Image (cartoon, rainbow, N blue to C red):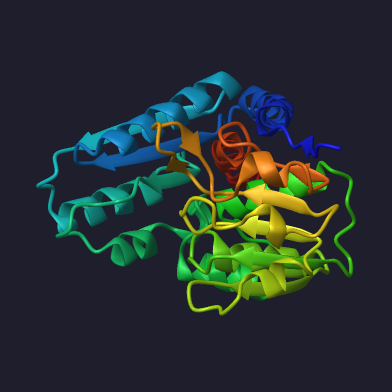
Length: 280
């Protein structure tokens, strides 16, 4: 029997309806939520991501400010602009699109954003709040993955979750969110010998390494939940994830497609964090 698809598009639409209602309530009280998005340079993928974020804001009633700068913008000028947005009461979230030009230190930029407006959840303080269980902003992609898992109705208490990948943006925060949900968590990565030893034991697998076919059907326990964060291209140029979707679908109980799984949820959780910031 084929696994049930976890539809990120449908769940995203459902959550965005809730976000729109919350945004309308705030706007009615004279406090429309506001998100500032900064793009430095002409990276084509970044331009698409930024355009999608701005459109998503408009769809749910969040005021967005898009600021585009040439690639030769100085680090000092960018930090000065962020300081101005930190002080702007109409802006509740600040997002600087990565990657930045090489002469700008991304860590310095992220740390310049007020923690109250760090809706990407990337700052050291936001990471510390997640680590210690405080109510901060969760990084958007792992936050979206948790919502996708929740949508299956699975209680994670006592379940074994395996996260493949250890990045600061997905792998590490994903593991912490799963721990908060009382799962037993194993983190695997490029230096893990015999990955299948761990994945075969897993009730939940989150693949986030950016490499095609990292996870194959023989590595998955029957009835597992598989969340595919990867975004790659196959030999025909078609979008695909990190897992062998067609084969694993015959083994798993639930699986996210690529596209249409994790992707739509990432922007949705950015909107959710922005609403949270405005409500605070």
